[in-house]
Image (tube, rainbow, N blue to C red; front, side, top):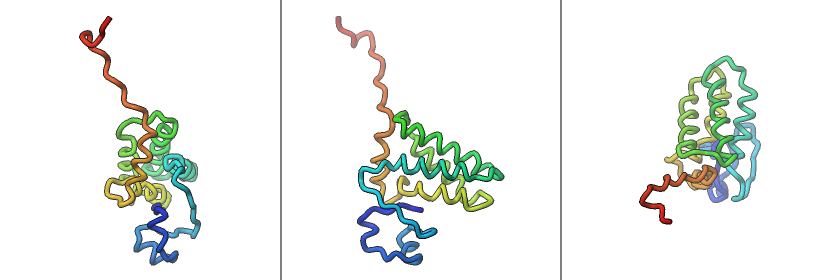
Length: 147
């Protein structure tokens, strides 16, 4: 389900229609409460591992997509992420939505919305960026080396 910040959820009436109007869903009615120290890549990784395990394997987008997203998130969580990994996750999720035989693919693609560039709650994406490894410095040129 799309994730809301505390400010977004504060005035929200917790019924199905109100949640839909706010861009989220109640689903089965379960609610997770997390503070600002929660690692969103870790939360996403836990969810995608569940969906990858539960995939029946009948359709390629869900079977391959869930494992590809999991691999990207595992890199991010391990601190070995690269520039563009979050965009790759979003792209895979966009490609999976609406192409699977059952709701599993749709379900794992929806939680990526908070990282989307068009999301009003894009601050989550900026909090996930530090999981990427630092950019490598260019190799020194001969003229840069001083003895």
